[in-house]
Length: 175
Image 1 (cartoon, rainbow, N blue to C red):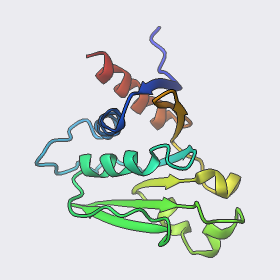
Image 2 (image 1 turned 135 degrees about the vertical axis):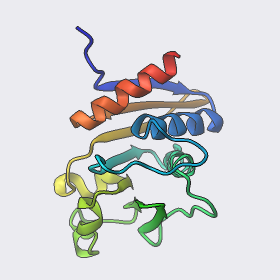
Image 3 (image 1 turned 90 degrees about the horizontal axis):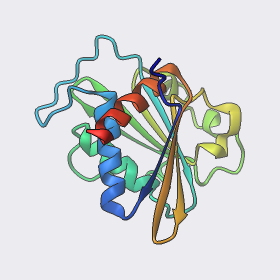
């Protein structure tokens, strides 16, 4: 029996490795991804990816590479001060949140972000732990930690969708 992985652990030697992993994850969610990307959203039910880790561990770098792989062009800003940056590629909506400045777990609701988090969109949340259990469940959690001269990343599938993505990612990295 071939069981889908619920965790994926990897050492990232540098920023290039972080970028490569983010691109591969985007391709694991959207396997038909290409440079002339026109997403087939007929069966897409959204994606919630929550990123955690120390300040400077590579969360924003990861998100930027992920968004670029999905076709976002132009400047991709960190939402540390704006809290949310929105993007649209074809009919695919992408929301990049950063809850670093939150001091209370309910602030994301007070800011009026519930609709985006429940939308059929790709939702990436940096510092998701600042909202504790107030957020809808993630499909996938990405935890980046400093390790030696690089980073260790642990991807944890929370939903069946997340398990499918990790299975796809595992297949890509072995190819």
